[in-house]
Amino acid sequence: MSRTTQQPASYFSQLEQFFFAKEAPYGMALMRIGVSSAMLWTHIVRFPYAREIYSTDGAIAQLSMTFGQGNYVPELGGTAAVALYTILICACIGSIIGWQTRICLALSCLLYTYFSMLDALSTITKYSVIASHLLLLASLADSGAIWSVDAWLKGNPKRNPFPSQPSRITPTSYVWPARLTQLFIGIIYLGAACTKLHTPAFFNGDQLKYWMLTQMNHGHPLGDYLSMHPALVVISCYIAVIWEIMFIFTVFTKGWRIPMLLIGAAFHIGTTLMLGLVTFPLVMISGYLAFLKTSDVQWMAQQYRYVKRRYFRNVSIALPQLGLSSWQPALAHYSLLLFSCVIVVATSAGVQAENWMDPYKKRGPNGPLQLQPMPMDKVAELFKQEEPLREIDRIFSFRLGTLEVSEIIIDPRTEFTQGDLLVAQVSLTPPHGDMFLECVLVDADGDLLHQEYYITPRDTNLVTFRLNMCETLLPGNYAMVLRANAKEVQRQPFTLKPGVCKVPQ
Image (cartoon, rainbow, N blue to C red; front, side, top):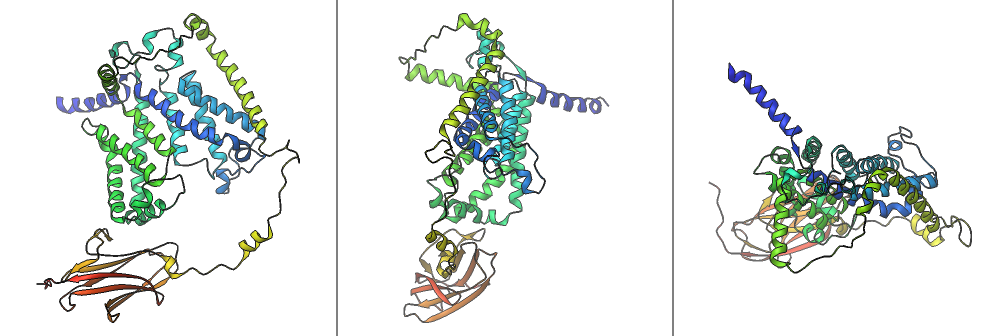
């Protein structure tokens, strides 16, 4: 009876400890700095175009208009939009340095969500949605308690301790905002895995393969190379889905937390190298910082001190003494007022800077820019009759092999042995229409020995032909010829060596 009554209490106490334990907010402070830094970069890049994409002076594309729901958020004039965008940049800087941290994080979240809703064409993306939630959760946490101007203004030097110092002198707070952040990231991965499970084009590698061939985001050093090895792409897709499903169930366990985070960081760095993504990996890796415990940060600080003592003992950096210690009480007392003044001055400077850039050349030598007629040769090029696509342009690759993983050849070869099962695989380039594909086996003299055909519908991008290389084929040189709509498009020569034909029992 006692065990029955104590067990629910034990679960409740564990749940309470999970959400309401007190720790030093190292992880949330690092996440605050990381996410705000990533967002600051995107805001600075878009600032010269703020009038064009966020105001009535330009071309607003509200997200709600895409669904025929009218305007969900108000649309402002050019000067007001530029002023608000300048405040957003200031709020990001304030979040990084930790000055009026909660206000800056709340402003960043609110204004970034507002501008994202105004621009459904480029601003609102996966990372903008995730980043706005991370900023909201960081504003709920006591992320400005350490490593911040706010902590320095408290007048207590122990509020910015080196992490390897004893935790008893470090400010602590409830961990529930960090737990919500961790659950949020885990649910993102679980939802992404569920979506991929209903997407066959992901598991056969088509989505990633054709994405890696483009420069849609930024340049990437590995995308072109890996797209030529579809088996590696397919294996990576399966590993990614398994990891996404396991993440939320293993990251809270002691032995799996660090490995799962390291795998995730490697996964997101891989998207930069293969797909050219930049901001999205930075946002997700910054979110990982919320998983760091006090002991993790203290261990890293101890390793830093060890390396410094061993290898950089004679290296010292002399920071300039600004003499602000005597002003600290006054700065702390008037911090909010000074912050407000800085925002006003910075906003005025931002509006004046945008006015000086004059994106529409209102003060140019010929007045505001005028729409110019399109050159007639360009008009003729746009309206000319579309050139028919050649059959060879519809073929992405034609490969021969023997082994398949998830219907993808993993051992492309040009030499076979009698008894092997030759697999000829055609990968088509989407979009393509319905096609009539023929795979023809010819000998060295060009005589036809075997022929197979397949009517390929427009929604199929992978076609496989199989041929048993039995003893009826003599060793020698052969070729597999691919024909599309009765036209030869590719020819793959291969050599057949002597061997023993496997007879089915």
